[in-house]
Image (cartoon, rainbow, N blue to C red):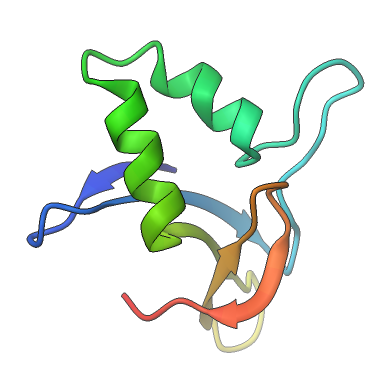
Amino acid sequence: DGLYQKADGSYVVVEVKSNDNVPTKPPEGDRQMSDPWLINRLRKLPLDSSIVFSNIKRTGNRVLINYQLTGSGALTFSVLDERGLPTGNRYQP
């Protein structure tokens, strides 16, 4: 899990889950990787959170990496929407 800056200057935020799980929503609070969840976490970092958030929204670099604990151990890279749910599109790292 983390926030990364790519060589082109854009940012990508990544959540890693196993076995096709999706980001969770606690009983009180926002779903992981949703807009409110991201804004809350970005504000805690020593950077301009509004610029980073705008960059993530513009580029769509909100990614869920699923890995399989059994079998091939394959990775899938899925784009997430503003609610923190998979869009059905694959992310190309």
